[in-house]
Length: 174
Image 1: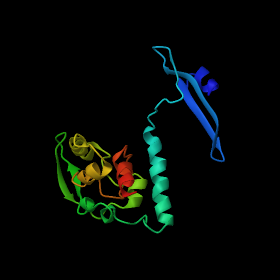
Image 2 (image 1 turned 45 degrees about the vertical axis):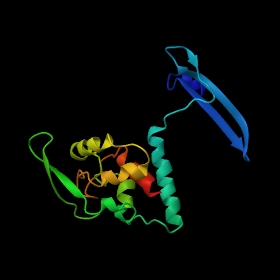
Image 3 (image 1 turned 180 degrees about the vertical axis):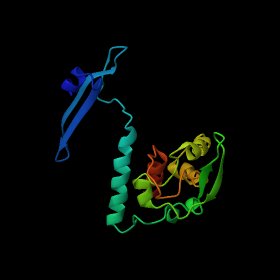
Image 4 (image 1 turned 120 degrees about the horizontal axis):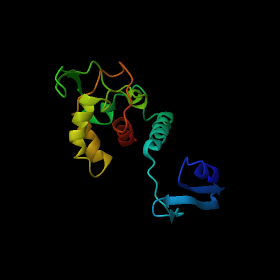
């Protein structure tokens, strides 16, 4: 960690190691606020951002092993509001679009592999952005609202990074 701090890759970190259920190492390194010169604290809270993606994916795969989820399951099996989704078709005028029915339902695998079209471009993200202001409470409160947003493209037809919506949806399935 000290090398990464010296090379300015990070400003600070907390390292923790357990062995056989026992804490054997806990150390704070560097700064948690460089401008204020505030040292990193052992109980610092970090945003993990995209690290939730492998956690959600692992949880889905564990449910697969238990026979509770299949990759080709439609998302609507778990979140009924995802049944009958629409795909946004952009118009020449920026921000304008019309919708057509999705050729098939979004699947668990589509969410895992960024091919769902869910909130992954200007049409769907704009609509999801309007819904995002209603994001409050639990995933159970928020995620069903995404079923009303148009997909950016037909499910499975292309790849586009879904920064949060796809994996938030997987989290709700879990």
